[in-house]
Image (cartoon, rainbow, N blue to C red):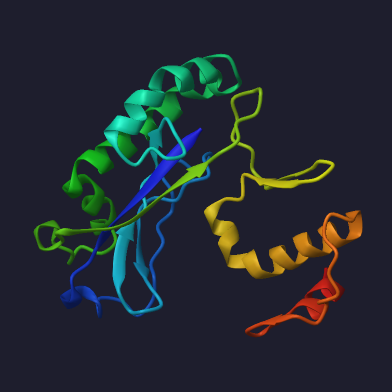
Length: 207
């Protein structure tokens, strides 16, 4: 299933509102989504988001793409474990909340105003980034909780690598490169390659 995460950019007058990003406790902890939060980017800009809007395509950033993919995606979901998920009342409640947060700026901002009441939705006028993540649903209609790695003869696939995993992206990538070397899909002598503070050989040694 595909979910689009959307953001709103905060004006400069809010850039000193907090010193750190602020994450709220998710309303639906059984699902791999955080509620919209307050994010301070590395460049100092601040954003509110993301929501988790169900969409029908990994490219479903607009109505045209979603309408085009609606029927084939629904047929696919009804024939798989996703059927149990979409008929689950708690998931339906989550989906309604997220769709409302996409259709209404105020609905989105109000979710963050619960812990940052000084924010005024009328002062936030610019949309931020957006991205689509694809979650794996098992045969019981449950969201797969962990990353899924699939080896094939000439390829390697990483599925369900959820956004919180970005925190560990560099050591995880070192693990993947080491695995590809081990199974012979990648031949590399660059075991001492370095990316910023990360040194490949040191990471592999710790894994």
